[in-house]
Image 1 (cartoon, rainbow, N blue to C red):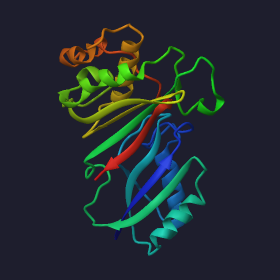
Image 2 (cartoon, rainbow, N blue to C red):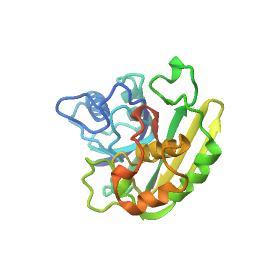
Image 3 (cartoon, rainbow, N blue to C red):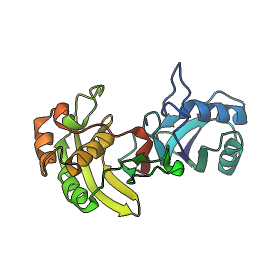
Length: 244
């Protein structure tokens, strides 16, 4: 039995997240169906993360087991021929039997993209969140540094979060501007449900004057979701890198 590690990218607009569901079409279902059709056998893939509905990925890893002797190149090109254009397998390699895309993951990096303009742009309709309110990216960059470190991020987790341990380590965090795009980047050893989107929503609340400067440290200490800002929409979120 071979264990294959695959890197893929996808635009999540048309899918109800990564993980297979009984009543909605997901990235996992699309990829498993394509791989199954290529290999002529039932395939289960094990993903590195469970991205939400509408969230995108520039780098997403999964592994699967097969007895088929197909080459890794054959897996990439054969599966891509069967997938819609919003999902693409990028690389494939054979790995030891004990490799698991989720449990062997040592960290992730996310980006959140905001189209900061009073005028809508059709090309950013489902790939960035539009905010008309002027964003001071230098202010946001300074404020977001409060996220860095090993802290209890319970206040930045959705009410639906089922994790009893809400302590995570944020390695780095920054905000930059590229023309009309404001980009929030964060890396860490793990993230809670909706954590990045709540981080962004909180930064926007500080930028808009709805929360005071320095509020992030206070909110973290409170462990109270009600103290943090809104949950930013899914369309601006990208799984950017995965570390092994």
